[in-house]
Image (cartoon, rainbow, N blue to C red; front, side, top):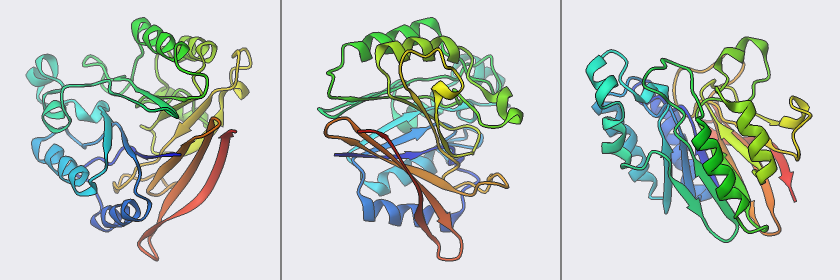
Length: 264
């Protein structure tokens, strides 16, 4: 079994120190094999914020880290940097790979950069990104669990969040469903949920899940959801289990509050 920790939207620069300490304690207890940072790692893409995020990752001492930028990880007010070097800060902290991959016998994880320098908040999938994922997944062994990681959501549960939907998602989901993607992980809206996408797109050729994470450590929480992360267990006989762990202010720890068995 491979254990993934999905940390989304930590917005370093707005982090809560007590929540950060509780998350580090959770990592020491659970020892994930892979850390997924699904975007909005910083609040304003400042060097100090990327440095704080990098220091956090180094303290965790996990074997593998996959990180993608979110819309907050591109400079907003520094227009020359946004136009010509939008990912300079991200690259210094997390390396040059904006679309990293992870693969072992049990699992394939493909992470995509859905930010665009000309979009302030919205995300987008290109035809090339959609097709590249589909071809990679179609070639994967039948025994592997296949996950895609994006920043902006491919589905929402409330009408008021629809403006945050990822551009190109419908074409992507149709193609990825055919190819064999099992779940698409995202963040951006700070609202955790797990949704079987055939409920919203009945024409999909096979089941595919949306797995959304809340904001991990930021004070920018929504009224209906506090700080949370996802622990995802994938492995033998194509099993996929998503656990939502919420920060509990009373005990200053993360506790498992929901479990979803998606495969197996």
